[in-house]
Length: 522
Picture 1 (cartoon, rainbow, N blue to C red):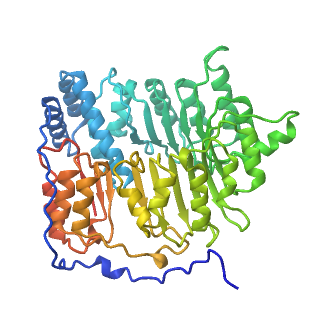
Picture 2 (cartoon, rainbow, N blue to C red):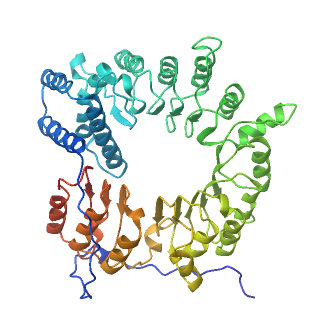
Picture 3 (cartoon, one colour):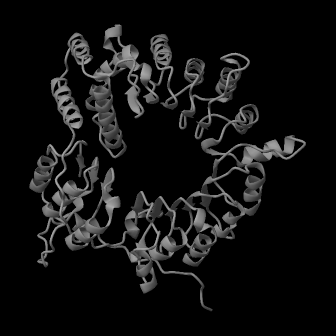
């Protein structure tokens, strides 16, 4: 009997040969794309010069008195120039930290440019260490924020394991200073810290305490009291997103959040299905929430029908398929679905036929499509691009263009397929045994030159390429073409790049025509 949609997995391939630095094979020299010279403005030039000088002066452990003397000297610079410098430094630094860099102290040197009237939109990463014997032992970035952090709107704060009286006092002063905070990520949070935060930061819209075992139902009740009555009886609740996943909060606490804070639109990584079932059983009428994003650990028809009834505004779902009998087509029960992140936990639970049928049915409204897990077949990029023309984010385990129709869809000048694409991720190692299911993709210089000639979407912030047949010329070409690039990763896996070439690439990135700081992460 023939098995339908049963694709045999690829045999494992040796990855060791990708780590070797071999000379490139001879090839026909293709003319490189013309890179027009970029003339940066005087404001950008001044911003880059002053930021480099500040980083150079503060590169060593300078006494705090001298740092504040430098801060008073820099106050004479125009406010918009200082705001641009802080924005450029924190934007590049945040991307560097997300992709493996550990230079937090070097990134926070730009905080010396802060004054209370400067509004900072980019996230600021700060760590509260264990207190020393004297107050002068606190890190420099903490003191700079305490003095001039009135304009911070996004803070990523790591708390110490033990909340002592000294740490609590500093954290309280931090919350009183940064009253304009709108997005906060707290690591190692507790009930006391989230209570202080919601008491003093009344403009908070996003709060993430996921992974903090010290957050319990008691802390959730305190948050609700602060949100409802902390600013008076007529105070407006601005909180829309709270993530209590992997904390000590029970389903009763999640029910309390959904019941007493109906303005919430997202609970982050928290599975809300059980809480919605409890609310549906306790309530007389059908429960209705304002949730727009949910996380579902088990996709079933009953759960999807409950979400459709209880969350009429749902547009974003993070779903997991982990047992037979559940298909991706069941997600068509959600009429307003626009963002889908699907994780497959068992082999052969997702077939290409079901994937293409789903994209044909709801693809016209999809903006985000991320598929990961045990998927051992290659997706037809042309079919997905034709069915989902408005995609802005696409992540697949593997991709191919098997048919002539797919190639026509991708190369048609009048087509709108993938014209709005901002993020493209092709990860061949997302299964149960990542190293055992690696697949080979050959990217050579000619293909890269053709891509840079036609695709303007490569002018992005992050570029990761692994196991490529590329060398120094191609790396310089990407640096010159992608002027907004902040991070390049995977260069050590290129078969035509040596360690000496990495040094030359880093030297090449220090050109004056580039306003953004480019980080080479091998």
